[in-house]
Amino acid sequence: MTRSVIIVGGGHNGLICAAYLAKAGYEVKLVEARDRVGGGASTVSFAGGYSVSGLAHILHSLNEKVCRDLNLAGAGLKAGPAVDTISLDRQGRHLTLGANTASGDGLSQKDIDAYRSFKNEYRAYAAALDPLMMNKPPRLKDMDGRDKLTLAKIGMKLRFGLGAKSMREFLRVGGINIYDILNEVFDNESLKGAIALDAVLGHHMGPRTPNTVLAYLHRLRGENQGLPTLPPGGMGQVTQAISDAAHGFGATIRTGEKVKRILVSDGKTSGVELSNGEQLHADIVVSNADAKTTFLDLVGTGELDAMFAHRVNQTRCKGTVAKVYLALSELPQFGDLSPEQLGHRLLVAPDMRYLEHAFNFAKYGEFSRAPVLEITVPSIADTSLAPAGHHVMSVSAGYAPYELKEGWEQQRTIFMDKVIALVGEYAPGFEQLVVGKEILTPVDIEREYNLTGGHWHQGEMTIDQSFMMRPVHGSAQYDTPIEGLFLCGATAHPGGNVTGIPGHNAAQRILKTQGESG
Image (spheres, rainbow, N blue to C red):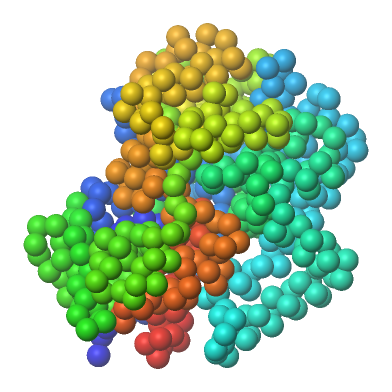
């Protein structure tokens, strides 16, 4: 008998879960509230004729196994040009960071060699966690055979994959802050600032915050999948390929239809009700939404144990990053950077002290007076994103707390102009090139992308909200206290970034619990 599934939300994880289940022969319907699939990994138009990736604007972590299993290349996935990271300097002493190489004025041979060793070492730490990433996180109590096997594989990877010395170092650094680690290894302040940004961007954390090494390892998992790229057509091309793959396996995808509630009776789901009153029934419901939306809004606390509902309510998921889209009349000039170099990933993160001071404002409900920026100009490689001769710039700007003391209604334009002015400090005359602009604060991101708190990763990726504790105890293995209801989004293990792993793991968990092989 064919099992029926409804998937709530058409972000990349929901699409991947849909593709796997449809491939396994399930009858799959995916319902997406927005008019297009992809969620934060979509391509959006703004300012009339200009397009840019929505939230995620660099493809750097889509899992290789997912790509192979779903034949995403055959479905139209194109990676685009690989990009390095360039840390901008007001005096033109920019640093260029690749996967293993670092170069730039003022960078010593000691730091160049240390960078190569550091990246190799920390990528090995990230790889040691692979058995945990591609499986449901093991319970530490009442473990089944799969849990025990996963723990055994992790132990083998740590002890024999890393070696005794590296394993001890991994255990030392895993839960501490990136600030102390980078000060132990490097001398150059700009180099430390650029690395530290990868540990804090998208989180309510500064370099001195505990768990930032873990956040950095989450980021490095992507490098183990391949070089970061700017996909042609924006991130929407990536998720469209996943959508086409799911459709090819037989999944039905409905956009522009918002789920009002998940139908539950006697602790078991039977489907969903749409905002127009239509009810869709299925044996299984899979939510790509965050935990708070899924349990508190769509299911409702009346169907949940009080302690479980309290744990969900206490999860931290308030975003601190704003997106700024800029339409430019021509290509800006950043010191002595060539147009080819401007096509890479540009950072404004001069040093770790700068990052920590920027974060300090967010602690008190204020936006950073000197923001931290991650910048891409995707129209250099893909001219279809802007009118002839024009360009688009995508900026991820922190820190911009969800709960701003003065409210975002009056402050949004002030922060956007501050971001534009800061870019102008590195590219003289930049303000005069801006012919269109738009900002999405975390409040806007919450509304536009249905993300509680406007958090990119559907919740902080700290140690207490990771692995067998993500999102909370009682729903950390993709199934939930509601029979037939599963989670497949970034709210579940292993968390955010465009990896596709939560969607993959959720599908395997569903197939396993239904007595079928994955």
